[in-house]
Length: 38
Image (cartoon, rainbow, N blue to C red; front, side, top):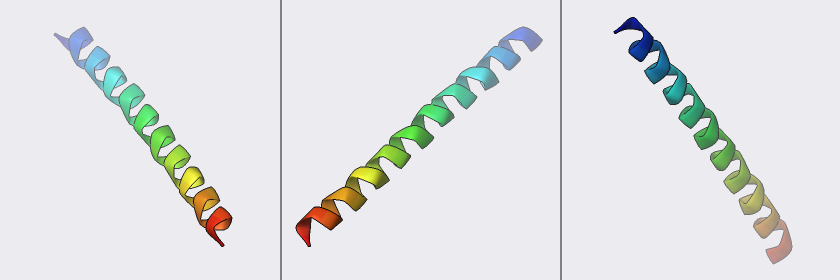
């Protein structure tokens, strides 16, 4: 039961990191798009 809990938190951390990277990429693309439109 404890192992499953650790594994679950690890998966949550991994998905959280992926989400953070996706948001970071979206922000970069958004900034580049704003610069190009000017």
